[in-house]
Amino acid sequence: MTAATIFIVLGLVALILTIYLAKGHLSKGGDLEKLAIQLRPVDIGAFCNLISASEQEYLREHLPPREFRSIHRERMGAAVEYVRCAAHNASILMRLGEAACQHSDISVQEAGEKLLENGLRLRLYAIQVIPRLYVSMAFPQAGPTPDLLADTYDNMSRQVVTLNCLHFPTHGMSSAL
Amino acid sequence: MLFTSYYLWIAPHILLGAFLICLLRRRLQRQLPIFVGYVVFELVQFIVLFTIFLHTPYHPATYKWALVTGEGIDSILELGVIYELANELLLSRSALGLVLRPTLQAILALLLLGAAIGSGAFSGISVERVTNIFEMIDFSSNLIEAGMVLALFIFARALRVSWHSWIAGVALGFGVSASIALISAALRAEWGKRAFGAADLTLMAGFHVCVIIWLVSLFLSDRTPPFPDGKLKVSDLELWDQELQRMVQR
Image (tube, rainbow over the protein chains, first blue to last red):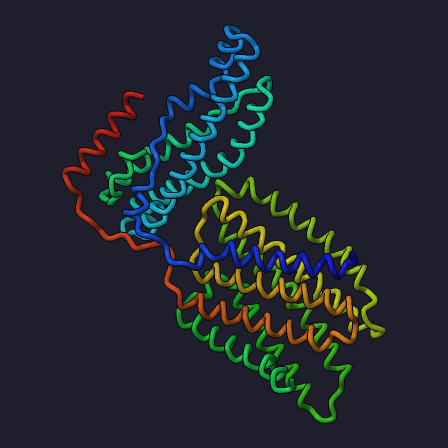
């Protein structure tokens, strides 16, 4: 295969991927009320328990190795689901933040910006944490995952409540979190 | 064939002029100033090249050097626009800037390496030095542009960052045009002079599509749905109260 053929293929792949990825950006955004229904409940306490180092240590000490590995895999699988739900909720709350940024009231704008910033941070953490959870699933001896994600999600929930307090209609999003 | 060539050379620039007028009327130049500079330069370059082309007697050497010089400046401006788009999308947000800046720099370094390898492979397309210089600049800038735009779209999708529709349109236009130009440059390298005509038409068609995307995206409404100023209901108040209580208990 010549260099030219390689670059023709690369150009075609780039063209198709760019058009595919840009499709979502050019389409009109959905209704925020409908998005609120898509929020999934996330129990931060349960998530913290799943990724707790002390909990992992306790199970390791009290269970036979084979059983520990099996249970650890299940726990990490559940943690991945929690992270996915939190990241999904973050993307919805970011839309709420974007809408709040357009509000005439400066305090609502500021709360919206904070929400947007935390949403981005959470999605970034999710991208980093999910592979680590899978590594932990495959190698239970690996170190525990940080609970930074739980803190960020908690911060986001607080900001939605703040937005509510600032007379910004959040369509019951805070109750769904 | 001649009509198609003229159409693909002139029509996109007329549309580009219309796009610039719309952009300035809406006062959007402050959002992407380098991009506006690029559009203005593109129009000036077209006028200069067209004037040289119509001038009698026609000097091919003058035309080619003007084209190469223009392509060089164009490439620098395009890189500036990519930086502007990256900044608008990701780097201006403090949460992402720290993590994504080195990632984007690494991608840029890889693309530069690819461009250097590709330029080396395509360095002998023509016996004319000026054509070779043009091909290398054209290929390198398009590879970097297509790669960076694709990387930006991938990050935006992964992080669910939404762009204002016209900025996404600018990025899409650049991505489409650069990808087609990359294919066109590779075609010229593979088949030499035989493919110059067809490859040039492909390149011009790509730019035409790009300008149409820019124009259409300018007229698309913003993606963020407007939120009405609504008065609070008692049920909402109760929900906040519950939420606050839940957080206090934690």
